[in-house]
Amino acid sequence: MVGLVRRGRTELYRSEYNSKGLKTRVTDPLGARLIRPPTSGAAPSPPPYDVKKLFLTPAGQLYNALAKNPVAYRLSKVEWETTIFSDFSVGVVVRGTWTAETETLFLRGFEYDSSNVPAYGIESIAFGARVLGGAKKMLTIPAQDDPSEKRFLGFLIPPLKPPDWTRVETSYKWPRGAIKLERAGVVEEQSLTIPGSVSAGVDVDVSVIFKDGNIRYSIEETFEAQEKEFQGTTVYRAKALGIAAGKKLALQIRRLE
Image 1 (tube, rainbow, N blue to C red):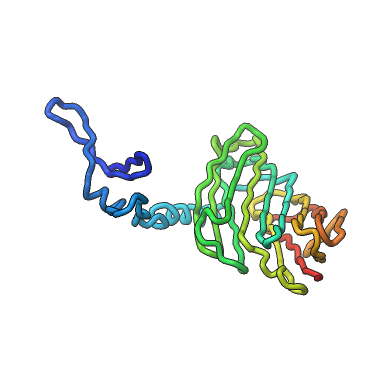
Image 2 (cartoon, rainbow, N blue to C red):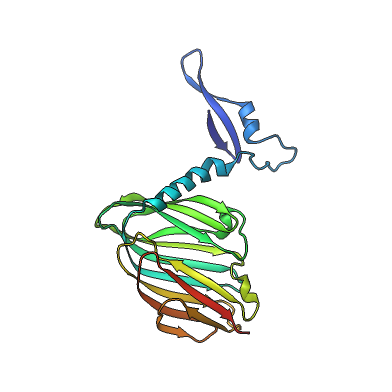
């Protein structure tokens, strides 16, 4: 049994052979009812099949297997950019250069979470990944879709073989993810964890952009910040040098007014 999407509707069909021995396609009405039940209006009903069971479960299993047996690689020239929007949504962009040293690198996992506001639906955080340099492409699929946590898998096509490199940018936007900053005096923490499988210390350029320039903030780091620049309102910049594998960098942001 095979699924076919045609002009916004899904049909099931099976292959049969007619009296002349030619292969034909026959629509299965029972299967079609299972995929898309009849509707009285023009708009189709949502498909009743369990997408999580069909797609997210095996992807999540692969994500967990990757976490247990990660491939070592070198990570360099990392840029971590956080944007706090006027409605206190949080946008995060991370750029980094990946270099295969002793093993072939073909798969990476990405995890994002928020304890402030749930995000319903995998598309709600607008996750994206793209290759900026190196002759590689990346295919991404979702691996977990909980309201407080999203996971994705990124496949390099073709795999990255030593000593090849590629530069990748990932991004997402969590709606109202920094809602704590609506109130003065409350601390909102934003963090970035260096993957545990990187082979050497990592230098990170850190920046925070506040879209509402009328609010004043203070920022404290859990790491030794170098070349820090911040006037309290619009843009924060700093450098974190030689960060070890598995280390979490955190910024504790406090609204002052």
